[in-house]
Image 1 (cartoon, rainbow, N blue to C red):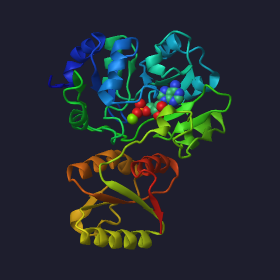
Image 2 (image 1 turned 135 degrees about the vertical axis):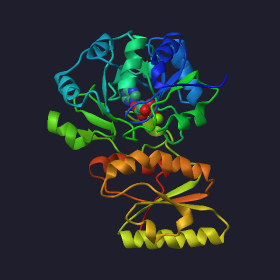
Image 3 (image 1 turned 90 degrees about the horizontal axis):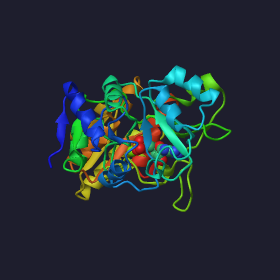
Length: 341
Ligand code: AMP
Ligand code: MG
């Protein structure tokens, strides 16, 4: 079966396919999601199969109204209502206690909580409303690979494994939503994303950021934290330090790797592009506009896969604001192989 591409004027057909229990990837403002009816257990199981996703890594439930959250959440605390008012629709996923028995264990990975998101993307909201059910939507990539920010990325990973893809062109934000756990007394960010810690704190006060590198025998709060993520095929090294030293280090390592016959990729910025050999580069964006860096991040990793490079050296970014989400993705893409120069 060749996966079908739905145009935006075919949302009715895409919604019908979801109702029929099929898998349809959908755009959001962050990355493309792999959609299935959250209330159809067989369909949800197929999401795990298509992605090769471990079954203990729960799925985010995408809704198009607060009423949809009320159907499945045991309660919506005040802090959640305030955040929904400010950030929904938008790139904030909120974890709440589940109304027992309201969604299958397949969706929650057996946890007593559910993650909800109300995306800021009209075609997605139309799809959910037309399907009439909430839609699960993990990133629509093969598990472990860079997340998809275009319909073509989804097609590359999942062609033949899913029924269709609703194509809305490249996503705007480019990194996944912020995952915030409100099911415990102390709210905590389990995954940094487009909505920053400071933005959330301006609404509900102090929160935690759970950012440590999860060991293999640990049980993390977000089950997804223990798995390899966003990884390009090449070995990747993230280089931190003063910019002139970073540039010198990357150029030096590139020469050494090339002398060994390796094909090298360099992730640089508009500001540094002239400081490296031309043929190796992917420009990820400008340091002046971190939005462009987030927007291009996954596409750059996928471009290096297509160019079949053996190793990638990447500049690093400040960990403020959106930089927190950018560095989280780059650290994971590099398998935490980080050099301080
Ligand atoms: P993805 O599906 O690739 O967008 O990733 C979603 C992330 O949210 C994964 O790291 C999941 O483990 C995490 N997540 C989803 N639902 C829950 C939940 N109920 N509790 C904790 N983490 C969750
Ligand atoms: Mg993912």
